Each structure stands twice: as C-alpha cells, then as structure tokens.
Image (cartoon, rainbow, N blue to C red; front, side):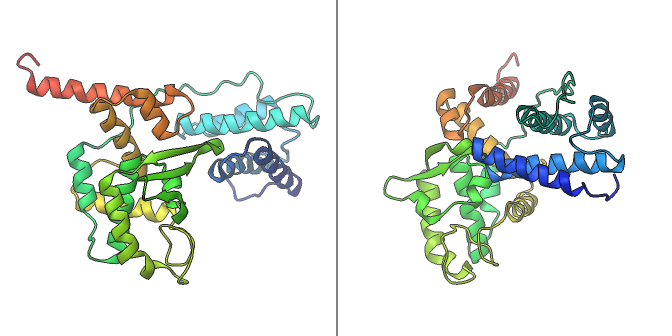
Length: 301
C-alpha cells in the first residue's frame, strides 16, 4: 500500500464516528484505536483510487478485502467488522443510501486453541526476573499479578494504587464495556506487591509521585509493549521455546483453574467475559491436557 493519506473529509468523518461510538457505547481506548486504524487504512486505500468513504461501493469493499489476502483471516474479519459498523452508522444518520458492506461475507475462521503454559513453565517464567534489582522486582510482581488474576495486559499496565484492596486481598477492575469486577489476588501476589511497593516502586517513579501502580521511567504507566518485550526476554531465560505473550499468562490462569476443578462460570466472571462461549475455549485446552496425561500415565494410553 502506498503512503497516500485519506482525504481531510474522510479523516474528519472517522474521528466523528469514533467519538460517537465512544459516547454511545463507552468502548475501551484500545477498541476505539483499532476502529480508527481500520477505517483510516480503508480510507487511504480508497484515496489511491480517487474515492472516499461515502462514495465507496460493494465492489470497492470486495477489492479491498482481496488486497488483504496475505493477512490472517482473523485480521481481515476484524477489519470487515469495523467497516460494517461504520457504514451502519452512516446509514442510520443518512450519510449514504446504500451500505457497501451488505452481502459481503467475512472469511471463515477456524477457532484455534490458545497457546498455554504448563504449571512448571509458569513457575520457571515467574522465577526468571532478578528480584534483587528494582526493575526485576517490578517485573516479577507484574508476572505474579497477571497469573494470579488473569487480567488482560491492558488492565494490568493501567492499574492504579487505589484499585488494590490489601485488607480484602482483591483488585478492582473496570473491564470492557465499563463492567466492574473484583478479582482475588492470592497470598503470593499480595506478598510480592507489598515487597515491590516497599523496595522498588518509590525508586521507579520518574517525578517522585503519581498513582500508576507500575510506573514508566518517563512517567505515567508502563506500556504494554515494554511488558511484552520483558516477557519475551524472561521466556528465553526460563528456556521456554513456545511463542508466548502477556496473554499467555491469562490463558494459563484460566486453564490451570479448570484443570484443578474450577467451575466454568466462576472462570468466566474472573476473566470478565460477557459471554460464556468465549470462556469455553479453555475447556478444550483443559481436555487436551487431560488427554496428554492419560496417554502418558494410563497403561492403555
């Protein structure tokens, strides 16, 4: 794709739409950023052809999707979903008379099982940071918290001091769609949090103050990207060859709970899933683990 930018009107239209979606649905900033990016990419593609978002046709949408053939089906489906929502908005507000996304089918997506870590691999990962230095103590604490709670990485890095209730041992999370949930931390994560607050956080604060639980050296909260790079580094130290991400610990949290007999509805609540079908993917992971154990340990396996 060339570097041609969308026209000024298209850029303004995208921003108007994103603002409207935020007002109507209260979506998280990450979701809004994804909508904005998807629409700008399509608008830039249209600009190369001297077309705009309001003049796009069904043929344009189909040709655009065809140009994404090398992208993963899930990525293409997400972009089409963003376009559909946008054009439905334009239809409702009388900006267009025909929806160019009508009768456009999304690519089929096979539901793959998430990569998860064994309990031994998680232990090795947790022990990889050097807790004798302040950054290592911070990273160990973050790993302990995300594995103990199953938080999304965006929820973890945006934690504020006031969200932790040390007396009750819970963290208060405002999840997707503005839904609040309380998640237990467990003794180990609480112990690491309290040690981190005593020994590392005061030195990590750039300006000497602020309410970010895990502050960045430049001020504000540590970024998702910084935590992602840290996990990659610690996975290498721990000898883990799987391609993992911060989300892998969320997967491990759910899978290990189910392996130890937790109820699916409880796991759904802890993860903050609005639909239990999203949580059910972890039952398949747990079943795969049971099959492996059976094959190894049963005389007829």
